[in-house]
Length: 434
Ligand code: SF4
Picture (cartoon, rainbow, N blue to C red):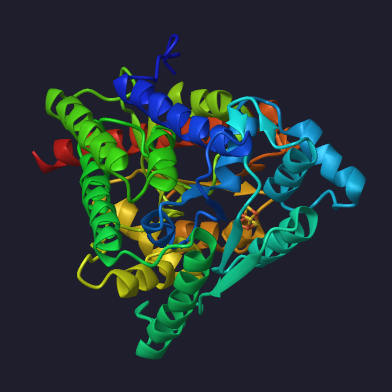
């Protein structure tokens, strides 16, 4: 194996993202410290109606984004332990515990201060922890909480029934009344259409960017580099800034693709990665793949905020219905496991992947339940080499570096061997045919 020397992963895009996210947290800090009277709503990432929040001039706050950033900075453990002292079990989702710990620490984070919610806007999309999380926050902070109930997609083709769409639209209409009460303004329909149009533009560019990794080499890593774009996709979706950022991202990454540049000196293996990253050890984890020349060409995690690569776009002509459809149908967490298999199988086929890597996380049963069967499915039914590894997305106590590295090394050793054997078999067959 060729050891890859020091690899620099960050480009211009990363700097632009840092600047936008810095501005975003400066806005949150201004609210938290009384220098701005902008209203805010705390939202969850999967299947939220952020366009409605933005259309009222409110700013969304994402506890998941806040706590993952603490994990990246290796500051999550004391907060998790603070929540455990309060009675949270060791096996509760660590995102929740870190967020509760953050609240108990005065919402002071190294990147900014988080304002107390004017509205806790939950959406039930398959994860019942979402509901309990926001109920706990309501109890702790005294903020009003609402939940949008999203029916699970039950049909084999993934289409929600007209009744399901109507059910969500009606709830969004009730939410509009609540947002009107909080902000003291009526819904401005042209503003909502503009916001939804911005989401459509971003969705289009994000889909084009995802398409670029079908090339060899992939111009960026669809797991590790996607997180740079996902932060903007979540926190700024619906804004002009998000459109500008994605224009720059598309331009930069298309240029890299045209020049045949990839994130590594050599792309040896193309993998599809399933599951959230171990945020406290992101760089270490990435290096475990990079040293083998393994690049993610697609990832399910990059679709937790929505699935655009298979054609969905928000529709400014039917803004509320398209928000409802996004929440219901184009939302990874609201889909059946078989639909998740299909999504991954499409990645393997259409993005020409050599293998699947499943990163199972202890915190998240929504994502991790059934991943053993998923591995069996890809190995046995699809004959795709598949590796299943485990750690956590927030809690550093569950990351065993040596063990993970051994598993990953053994997997890529076997893949390399398999490739050599296939090449020599092909040579022998060609010789015999002469
Ligand atoms: S269990 Fe999973 S989906 Fe639910 S809040 Fe925790 S990390 Fe998010």
